[in-house]
Image (cartoon, rainbow, N blue to C red; front, top):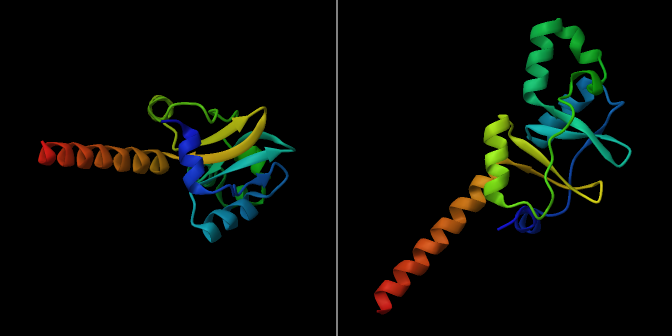
Length: 142
């Protein structure tokens, strides 16, 4: 299974912010959408990722003044990304190795999706449960 399979079930909307956005505006988007991270866009390119962790680190380092800074100053960059044809297992391994929870999905230099570790784990569990059910059905019919 590939990342494209997950994108097919999630829908095509990707919430993002431009590099010029303030940290406060990006944080408001995170809170409003109840999400943990946003891709930060420079035109059509992913410049970085802005996450709850970035907010925490910035406030710990700079105090409340961090909220007035541009998101580009606080984001994690460069963004680690995957292509739609990346295997789900490969993406999970990458996230584990790099200790990240979100991946932009990029095809031909354009952002086509955004997946979280939760998306990948959920898909994996559903797949394992479906395989177990198929095995139970096979055994019962034999």
